[in-house]
Length: 322
Image (cartoon, rainbow, N blue to C red; front, side, top):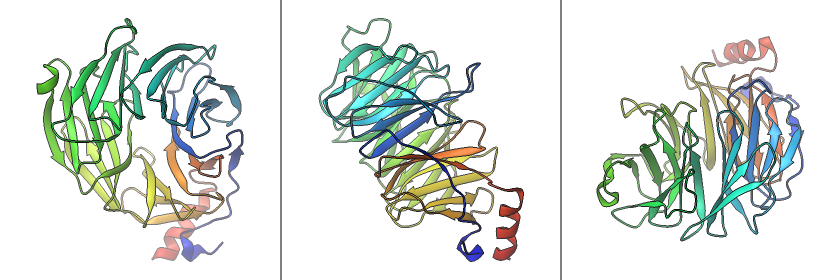
């Protein structure tokens, strides 16, 4: 492990087996009385719930016929939603593992999000509109919000704790902002320019901080209250995913070169570089406390890494950079 490679690379992460295809999405719950939980979406069609601290398997949500592209878990880890290749989204009871409802869609579902109050489900994907489902009336036809031009959605998320305001991004070089209180054809209230099309993204649990990985190899950080881009970082080539933990002052990224990298949020300097996955890294997410982060790979494993494995690591690598 060369220090010039950005600090230590000797960390042995916790490896979480169980999936047998690529893992494409991870999300942590908030910290609850029972701890913190993590849901994984996998192309094997078997989303899983794990203990977010230990990585231990809790259960598998059985029922999808094909690839699962998206998964989310609500704040208190009672509900999970998944989005799948079989033109559907599903709502699950995260305590029993039972499927509560199957929501049919017009095309592959690539993004699912639960509102803060768990009353609504927002879904999007390879169809030119977003679907908003009322979870109190799951049989009802969803509200459909059409894009003004052809568009595939990679990420759609509620903004700032609202269940009416949401954003989406994907195949256009735009951040689309929506207000569900308006008529569907008028609901797209604003677009903001991005550096490229969007590969992946993450919204903070409070809906106030958005990060996007663009085709221009840029990590864009947005304040979703002010609706302003507040930071932008150049990414290594072929990055697929990134996660930012502002309180810990760190961001992480990974992609096609199998390497997981840790950066300083203030300076943008690389602090650590880790190998371990045997396939492209499709997703990285920080745990709520920022002490660990998880990576999901095409190799079918989730790896849980310590953000700062030893007190000296970051200091040593910082000295090397000077």
